Every structure is written in C-alpha cells, then in structure tokens.
Image 1 (cartoon, rainbow, N blue to C red):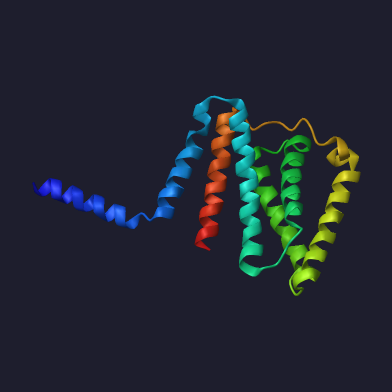
Image 2 (cartoon, rainbow, N blue to C red):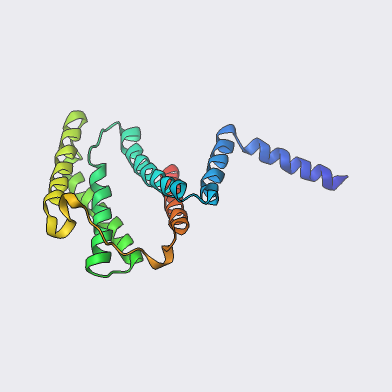
Length: 187
C-alpha cells in the first residue's frame, strides 16, 4: 500500500514538473532519435540537413531574437567553418576531430574580426556591413577556383572513418545540435 502510494506521488511530482512545452520537446526529441529507424536513406539525409540548418537558425536567433540586430553574415561563418574543415581534411590530411575543432575556432575568430567592425553599428548599418563582409567572403570562395573549386564546388572530401554510415553521421549531427541548443538555452 505504501509502495503504491509512494510511486503514485512520484508520478504526480514528475507530471507537475513536466509542463506542456516540456512534453512537446520530449516528443520532438524522441521523433528525432527515431528518424534513422525508418531505414530510409532519404529521411536520414533530410533529417541531417534539417538539423544542420536548425543549428544555423539557433545561432541567428541569438543575434536577432535577443538583440534585434539583423545579420546577413551568419552564412559567412557557416561557410568559413565548412571550408576550413573540408580543406584541412582533403589538402592537409588532418583527422576529422582536429579539422572540426579548427573549423569552429576559425569561424569564431572570423566572427571576432568582423564583429570588431560591426559592434558599434545599429539597425540598417549593422545589416549592411554584415552583408558587405558576407559578400567579400562569398566572392573569395567563388573566385578562388584552385582552393575552393569556385562555382564547381569542393568535391572529394574524405568522410570521417568513425562516421562511415549515414545513421552514425545523423546521430553525430543530432548530438552537436542538441549540445549547441542546450548551451544556447542555458546562456
């Protein structure tokens, strides 16, 4: 009798702690975890792309949502990180964990440099300067054919051995995005 009442009281406490939003979040997380169980390569690729662009949206929300500043430079850091990781892995044979860390570091350093010029600007001036820097980086990537492949793109980047399947890559991406979302929410 006591054991049953004790379990019921625990259930009520958990139910009171879990708000409607938390239940929806829990269901969403379970859905994300179950996507690879569909055994459809299409849904796994689509889920991975959605997660990557979701992370992009979270970073944009930090600036637009909390400060009200419109930035056209977010794709710049996204591209700098992607090219850094790809170039280090393909041209210098750097292992993925180091290339991935270097991508984040160089993206962050680029943000600090560009941010130095943009930090005191407001509204439209901030947006226009981030757009200008974004276009400079885009032009460099587009015109530097020998390094980036230009308009043909950058092909032949070796895939990390420990992420050799689409499902493992999906779960890796899910972990990175979940960690980033958690740290963003705690900030």
